[in-house]
Length: 314
Image (cartoon, rainbow, N blue to C red; front, top):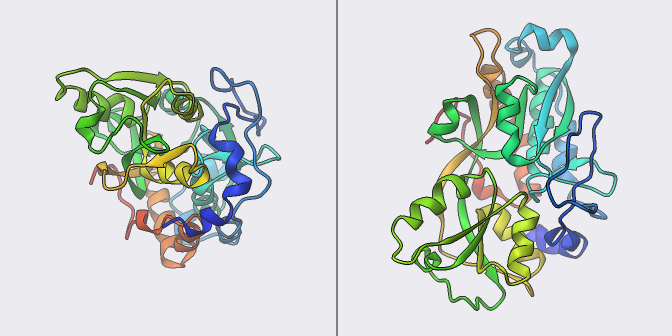
């Protein structure tokens, strides 16, 4: 599944253990706790970004964009760029990854320009609820709990997977083997809020859940031996295991709670919400082939959807 990632593993290696994030817009907020350096790479797969930037305005999509955004010509999008290959920064501090490629393609179809902001993951949805941002592309799973606070439109599917130190010294072979172990997860994620607590309820010996401010911190806890495993999105886990096979290992055959991933937007009255515009934009880039080109560039074709859905957890 990750043939092209293997080809570029050498230039991505610095990300796997980095704890830093680079501010890259005029609206960048505080970096993740513990950040003290830069997270960048020398080069990235460019086919997805090229395809996204080639998307032209779609009149049918543009007609669904709220007038307030059409008047400004801009859309405020927030992400946490510490989650390669979905969201991270290049050597220039620009936001890159599958999420940003999809965002650019969809927003181009709307006829708008993106005004990027960066926030730690567990603070993003509060910003969406407060209407500080118009949308977030940061690999959010669509869950019933999140739908109580925001609206979401799905654009790919992902489950959670387990990553261990190379050689699997903790001998984790199933989800029950997480019991009694120290497991690192990123704060605010589905893994931290739902998946690991649910597994813990089945354990005789409780899980030592290590909540980290950023994914890079969770990876570093595993690399340093403080954690026995990391649980995160399967695409992310596969990516890191490809990047540093001497440090990390993907536990094959375990996929926890597959779920759709979506863009989150503020809940607003009909005519002011972006849900219909994003649904139409995603469908338009699926239909014209841009969507497939982006997923192929990141070797994540298995995560593609046939069609987007509004506020659906299935």
